[in-house]
Every structure is written in C-alpha cells, then in structure tokens.
Image (tube, rainbow, N blue to C red; front, side, top):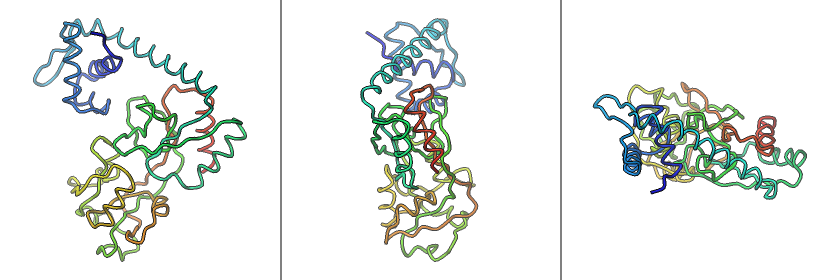
Length: 293
C-alpha cells in the first residue's frame, strides 16, 4: 500500500508534538481521525511508530527512523508544488483571493488599480470560504492569498500582515433589551446566547465568542458557517454575535441592530499567504493591501 503525503504530515505532527490533541489542533482535524490515520500508517509499514502511555506518548525506534525521511519528503513535495504553481501562474495570470466576510473598506478597487500598474495583465478572482476553514482556503490550496480575520492557524504554515484594526461590535435582533444603548459593555453581553462559528474554526471561534474575556464559557445557541447565516440567526432572535466595526456598516439590515462593545480588545483584518510562497503576484498583492488601507 502506497503512503500519501497527508499520512506523513499526520505522522510528523504527532512526532513533533508528542501529543495527539495538540497535533490534531495543528492539523485542523479531529483527534479520533488523526489516531485512525496513524494506526493505518502503522499497519501499512508493519511497525509501531509510537508507544502510547496513559499520560504521554513516545516515539519508537521505528518512528525515529521514519521521521527525517518523512520531513524531507514533505519538504520536497511542498517545494515541488510551489514550483508548479509558479510555472502555472506565468500562463494563468489570475490570483485567487479567499474571504469569509465582505472585504469592503475600499480595499479591492485600490488593490486592483495598484496591481494593474505593477503586474499588467493580472486579474483577481474571489472565492468565499466557509467559517469552518480557519485558513480561509489557504490550507486546501483553494486560494492563493486571503483577506482574513486573525487569528489564523498557528504552526508556521501561514504568514500574514495586518491590514486594519477595528473595534468589536455586537449584532442584536431588533427589540433586544440592549439595542437602545449607544455602547454595550461586554459584561452585559456575557450571559447572552451567542451565534458561534463551527468548532473547526478553532481559535477564530474563540475570538468571536470573546472567550479570553469571560469567566465562564459562552452559551452557544446556534452555529453558523457563513456571515449571512450569522445575521439570519441574529435577526430571528436565536442569539447575538460579535463582529468588526467595518462589517457593522457593510452588513446593515433593517432587522439587526449593531452597537459598539466596550471592554474587548480590537479585531485585526490581515492579508494572509502560505509561508514560503515567494511568487511576485503574492508579494505585490500583499504590499498593495497594506498600502491601500
């Protein structure tokens, strides 16, 4: 049985973390799925790669022998993909931009103008990515760059530059008892039912629930996979939701009231790309984003 690069990525993550929970979080997969994949790899190799203790795991001699080869193969494959992408880009001349909420802020017209000056003939294509993918399409290589809210997944696979910093607001259904206030203290919101991002969004879900500002976990009434689903849930009275100040303007609706929230750290919108992607189009787009806002 041939082993896939994905299997090697899973193995390397566990070998480097020596913890299935942390490795699963790093890979954005469930722990049971990761454990199953490692067992299948062990069956394929007819070798035990990890000793699984009750409190800790350790890598076996077989696993230690495999590790440097797996790391090298992954590195070779990543470099090969980048070289292929570079060749394709010279003939394609299209940069695909991922996003999860409306970009707005005058960013795209300004960036398009600047790219036309620096890279004549290039075009931008846009792809909306559900909240379930915290990398905004970059991990799955659906997009070349993304305009995304921080935090993005840690681990070094992604790089970013902050484009703008905005206060966090709250979206409330019309008639909500807090809707008449000009500003809403977060303490007054903490016990409200919240519309949340999917669990697979990880740290991004926690950020928009303001988990680090709470004494107890948020009450989640419903999960939404897109911004439109979020506002529909709020409008129907199923919960409230935090959002960036700029998005409060972009998503104005008659059935939703948005108010600034006090007591919270601000949100950060960033241009994000895959670490090591040195293509000229990616560099020009990134620099244009940072200059234009």
